Length: 173
Image (cartoon, rainbow, N blue to C red):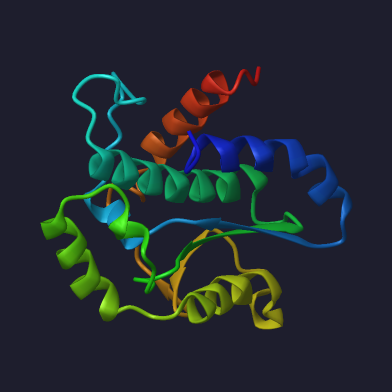
């Protein structure tokens, strides 16, 4: 809900204001973890057999799919451009929370190879302000370069289905 439905609903609520602006950008934060993600259509809230990592991967896939679908719905002539950003592996202590000693150790090793939060934030913010991106929309970006998303993220029919499901879950007619 926090990783996917919150940005979906916030974007929906802001669309009239964004549309009134001469130009606007929406930057969704996804993750390379979307590649392992799968939308569990019959149980999107993962109430059965909950797994935190699988839920995270699903949510990051969903964010990327919604960014793509919003770009499609707005169309090529829209003054609102959308982007999905992979912030990269960031050196934080997020993996240290309520985990076993082994998981904390593995996270520490993994995060040590990451970039600083400032570097990551600068790369994501670049999508919101870079003049050269005027007219570009719907892409998936990492470290200021457009990259290809997973095949699941590029499935147009699934993106439309997810949009409709998200709207229903948020109470949007």
